[in-house]
Picture 1 (tube, each protein chain N blue to C red):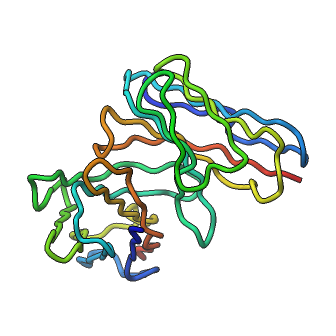
Picture 2 (tube, rainbow over the protein chains, first blue to last red):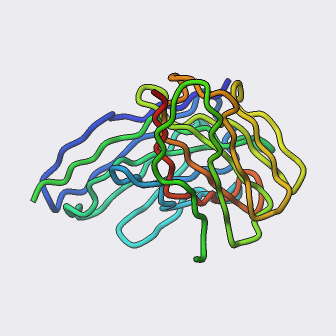
Length: 111
Length: 112
């Protein structure tokens, strides 16, 4: 059974710092990987999707990469802002399977 | 409204009652999903559907029933609610399994 770990579980940083969130899968055969943001009491907002033929995706200050040999993904947030405060979840799928979600990293960016 | 919507947003019910949570999407996505989110367990898949009239169990299907008579709707029914079904329920959709999923705002269900 695929299991997902996200490290750290929680992170607090001052505004302006660059930071990295980590996600790892017990089965490294990840076909597609998606990063989400969840604000308190809200649904999940899709941030980035890395598809089978890709190794990374970028959107604004966000960059996500996937190492398929190890089953690890990182989400890089540049120049963090208080508005980035949220829980970040990764989800991965093997070919033909449904997504499996990580527990999330709770990020606080302090002004 | 465009996108994916869920209703009700909040629901309080009693043990043993039947409850139906609604999900509606306007993208004509083939796949739809129901998840529950609980502290300590993260997001877990309850049921999913690949198309109208095609549904399948996820990780935690016991106590739930789904149907999908129309592509845009995917209701989730708790036939006899239990306290352990107190949770936040999310509906999601995508055009193909494994592709980018889009989530609804969630329904917070409390079973007393």
